[in-house]
Image 1 (cartoon, rainbow, N blue to C red):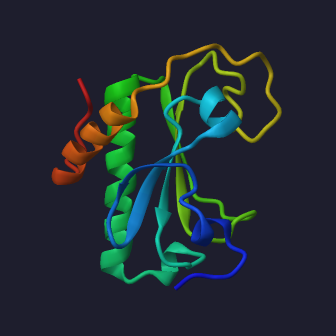
Image 2: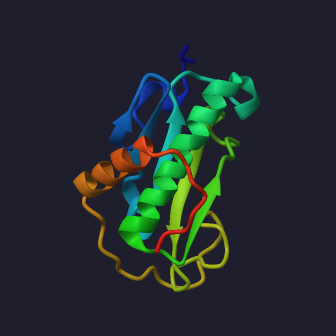
Length: 149
């Protein structure tokens, strides 16, 4: 189901890294992607507003994908922190933000949507193929709750 006027129903939402019939993982492009390298979104394909709109199996699948993206970003980018957010105030289409953060980034410790407190340092963008390959590996594994080395 899609809704006319919904940007996430109409567009991919960024650079597509992976998709199945229920959700997709995109790399955020534009200023946010430049300032926060590796920033990804996990977007539910059908237009729903809230996690509680999903059946239990669908919600579990979505969270598995969110965790796989987090594990991918930790492995590839080695950030100081990962921020997870599912707001939907501006775009009421279910999606999760998965954002690598560093202590010296332009907004730390505030959220990326706050006013920045310093210039954004230049960090290399991870290659999309590297992100996609790691993501596929993590999607094949059940979440174990163990830390990365």
